[in-house]
Each structure stands twice: as C-alpha cells, then as structure tokens.
Image 1 (cartoon, rainbow, N blue to C red):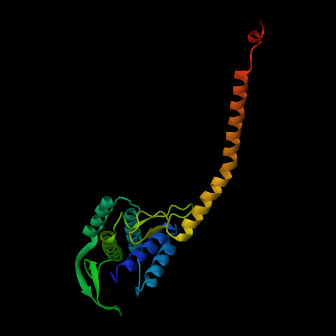
Image 2 (cartoon, rainbow, N blue to C red):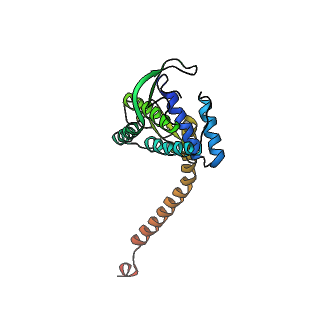
Length: 213
C-alpha cells in the first residue's frame, strides 16, 4: 500500500474514485471487482479483497463523503480529526514495491485496506484544507443530474460545479429557462396593464347625474 505522494492529490483522487464506485449502486462480487480495479489503477499490486474488506471500505467512503459534502470549515476539521484519530498512526518514511521513499500515516504496514484508505485520504485532505485560503477545497456538484464530489485548490471562494462542462451546461439551462419564462411574464404584465387602463377609464367617465342640470 502507498500513502501520500507529492501533494496528496493522488490519495484524494483515489478516494473520490472509490466513493463513486460505492455510490454507483453495484453490490456483491461486482462491487468487490470494481474496488479492486480502482485500487490497481492507482498502482496497488496484488489486491485481494475479502467481503469484510469491501464492507469496511464502503463505510470509510461514507465517512469521507461526509467530509467532502461539508461546507463549513470548522465542521470539516472535526470530521477529519475523527478519521485521523481512529485510523492514523505516527508518520514514517517507507520504500517498497517499486515506490520511492514516501510517507505512510496508517498505523502499520499491515493495516487493513480500509484503515489505510481512511488514514491516507484524511491526511491528504487535511493538508489541502490547511493550504486553502477560503472555505473548504471541495464540494458536491450542483449541476442537475450530476452530484459528483470534487476537490479544487481552495482559491477563489466556494465552487458549485465539478467541471467547466457542468458549469456551462447549467448556465445554458438557466438561460433557456429564463427565455421560456419571459413570454409568460410579458403576457401577465400586459394583462395587468390592460386591466389598469380599463379601471382608470371607468373612474374618469362622468356619471349621468353629474351631466344633468
């Protein structure tokens, strides 16, 4: 198992991919195979997941999802500290399996998959949080039909979309919605104007009694 390479982006991206696997709704052998494939795509070798590993990884993914959907910085810190207290150990430098020296933060080199995932992802996310300048450097996409979890560099304030594609699609959708609503609004305004004019004319018409002498 490998932990914390470069700036931790690999660890966070790996966690995001596993979260997507869990949220996809697959179960049983299909879920185990999808988790195994994801771990191997991120460089892990000889992955052999048992049913208990799959369940524990899914639980960790749920805990990480809670962090990634938390917009309040202080609350996110509490959730990360909880994960680190439960799964992390003293940092140490390790070189193995073709990887150069890198930091491990799980409690032992024989830690189970879920504990390794929780420790490495939580430490990487904690590092990202401390380096962000405004709010939390992650979120859940607000685009209709998306809802993907994402991370960013933490600069420029809160973000609402996972990609420029979703952002552009939502902008187009809002524009079309406004155009569709414009005729109805114009018709309502026109009807109100006609009604007001008729009322005004009725008020100013002289009565029969006022014209007789």
